[in-house]
Amino acid sequence: MKRIYSVLVLAIVALMSLSAAERDLWTGSWSVSWDYPEGDEHREWKQLGQSDFAAMEAGSTLYFYFEIETEAAYHKYNFDNYGWTALPGHEAEHDSDFGFGENTKVTFVVTQDIKDAIAEGGFAIHGHGFEVVRVTLLEEEPAEGVIWSGNWYVSWELPDGNEHKEWKGITPDDFAAFNVNDTLCLSLEIVPTDEYHSYKLDDYGWNALPGQAQVDITANTEVRLVITDAIKNAVATGGFALHGHGINIVQARLAAMVTPTAIENISIRSNGIRYNLLGQPVGEDYKGIVILNGHKMIVR
Image (cartoon, rainbow, N blue to C red; front, side):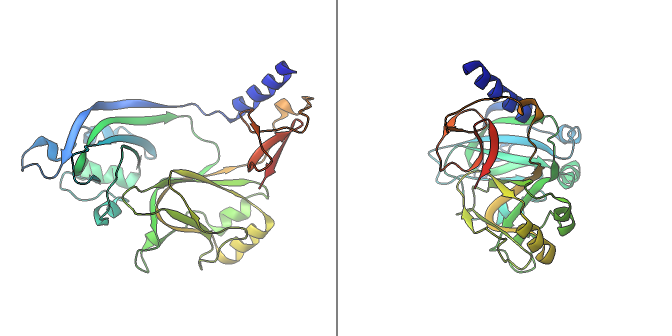
């Protein structure tokens, strides 16, 4: 029994695994403060040059590790060029009055617009009250089902007409091609300089999609929307948008609900115990994909 169960878990993990690793581009302990006098090298961090970004593909993901300097009165960062002009998609950092209060890992997606801006004006990090200690590049195999990637800031507090009041990266035509029971996965990252973080899945008129409501979050989150007939009909009529505040949308992917043939014929009795995809027992209140008596099902 134990051997069969182990085979089941390993088969599922193998089907879901995605090879990914962070490769160090820079490590050190570089203090940053715009309070330093003109000419001091620690007024900014410029350890990645224009040639480094030229060698990256659009869509590459960098991670910046910041540690706060506890004696500083506040902690704030900006992604800029050499002339202190915000990079595309990072303008909100300049407009915010809020800082971050703990060590943080910041995700930076290198879009083509960002590559073009850096090629023209360079790349720098400005701010106050923190140290840059590590910069890594995410190396991974292409993720199946990715239908959008970028770094799109969303805030419903922006004025009417500002494109960043919402995200509409998936069109009604996209939804028409989705199958019922497919799962749309949206990767959201909180913007630490904003005072709160929230999202809602709506149509173009800000009407919530069937079964959806406003959700407040405090950490990076993957939102999973199971496609139903009701949702497809609502989007066909009113479109699809994500509204909210204090978040970046960095990826949208579609996960098709397919039963893996490699484990279809395994016979196993679990005596009514439910397991998650890592083979861990879960309670009846667990939401998501569970395995019960050898069969996968979605619990919502």
